[in-house]
Length: 268
Image 1 (cartoon, rainbow, N blue to C red):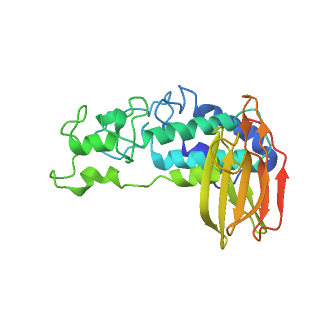
Image 2 (cartoon, rainbow, N blue to C red):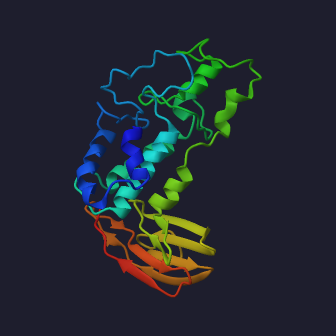
Image 3 (tube, rainbow, N blue to C red):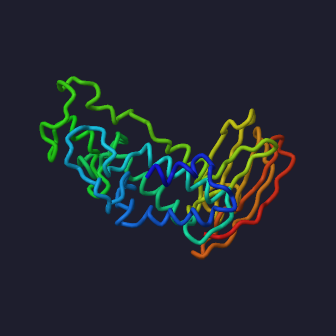
């Protein structure tokens, strides 16, 4: 999947070629490609290299790695926010990816427990953390790949092992914050009816953003509201989408809070 994520992650795709190369994102949700219930595979399902027969811990042979899922999430954000609209992939794909990724950040399905948890690689179909089961000798990996005694601290590293960029995907994708030289942009990629980010430090100023589609969640009324350094600088109503729901608008805001401009953008 690195071949899919990296060009868009680093902005290496020429703008004029965006629609052509965006065709590759069809593989992201294709069950024969990278698509899976618990997160995208690192190897296409149809590939002869796709297998889980190796008992070593760190394999890129098909497991879903948070490291790579976060990269493809950022790649999608860059495609949807900085390139012209194209017919292959849209807001719905990012929404599904982020929701799947969020659900994977627990041990609920794998171990019958529900604390937050993130480890190296997740089984894309069955939803358990492969490396954790290998370290603990849990079937189907009993006696496989253990690094040491039960006191080995790596056995429980998933309680604090944070090598994904989930928070970044929420802030830059779902909320849609992007910093530019003269202004910051708010371009949410989300179908959620409300969100709130407060006192996010951005280029030397504190930025707060509240989205409330119908005004029922927060005491600021319906729409997208922006504060810079504690001062409300403006609000904008939502925009219609193909789902018959309100989507947050796209805004450009100056760092000194003196200018807020609504930018036209397509629906979801």
